[in-house]
Length: 194
Image (spheres, rainbow, N blue to C red):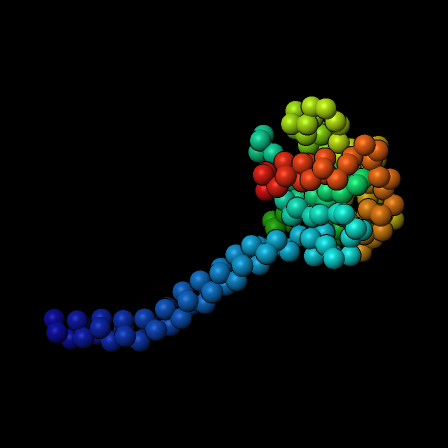
């Protein structure tokens, strides 16, 4: 009996430090990830915030009241633009408007067309802003981050290379009637959803 208890104590003494080290490393990794997320610079457009045209503000992500999450919003004189990422090219294939993605079990499964999804998200966001801002309609523009040479735009969504985001935003026309006070109000409405 004493030898069993001694063996158990010895096993615990040998494995406990390693277990505590693993748990500590995992907690440090989680804390670092939370700290990166708290800074808000984890999205592609937010990382380029210093390069955006004057008067533009990035909101890394919002959650609409219906539960839909929209990443990388930019509020500025153009109105609101947001950028969703395309799935990785190595894991997707397209046939016309049909998109498929390869899962870890190596099977191809259909997914929603990212450009159509972004256009619908723009409509949802536009309706939400119209409900909040009754005397003014804010222009909402959707874009996906990807290779414009590989994926063509559609009527409701542009395709922009990540490095071209600042110049794409600078090329958008300023929305007439969107005063600095209205821009600040729209920014406040969207920040409340962050």
